[in-house]
Length: 331
Image (cartoon, rainbow, N blue to C red; front, side):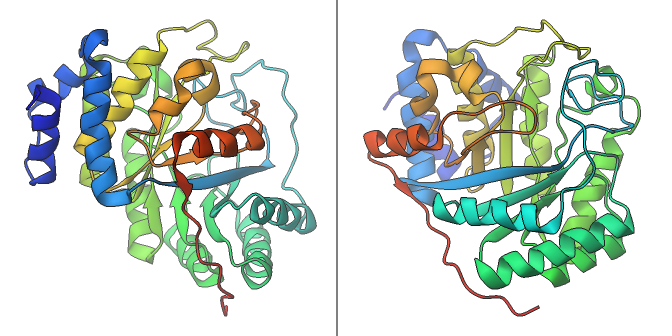
């Protein structure tokens, strides 16, 4: 048995990898990359078979954010020429859900910029979610920033299934990326979501001048947080942001990162997220041997791949869309 398959077997038997083993994944020789991905696929197949979950984002509020996150085109320090607007009207949010349903998307993600939502914005999202649930029965993920306990409970009661709040980077690297909130602020929001009974979604952005040990620490932190869904973003450096011009990634390293997250979080949904197209490039299909979830359509302020191309990619791989059973929800 080769090393990577043996490591996969030990993970599936409940063994936690050492830091040395975890770093060996990121340092995997390119010649062994397919062997590494085979090990990751064995883990993925055990828990998810050959199914792929589809997610779609609607950017319900763009820009106008007081935070100083170095990667983000919507932050107060960004000079990127993006659209800036307040919360979209309810009809537009619901119309986006109709599009998601037509694309066989299982999870519709309602995202808004800002440090955290006002009570008025929570009211707005709650109203939209109730209509989406009664009309389309989609699984709803909200991503609205730092959340208070009473706000989390209101979202839960409205039918929000999942809440996303990324840790983004390691605790050690956090202050190099933003100083307007702390790493613990992010962890606290994830814990608040869990306490409300909403499924926690939290992930990372790789390629922000972190070390390989930082990447390992991110994956381990999400295991400790017990995030049900882990979006792995790869930095798409946007002109006008503090990280403008940063270009540390290549497609092979991105595949190793996805494998690492699968080995460390074997039972969790691993989603290839922002930066997929520009960083994995022609190797995008190989990422799904480790990950079991992708976004279709556009991201927040950057364009994604045509959704028809994503569906064709899954067909060519012999994978199948993991359809979420759509049920009417009484709220």
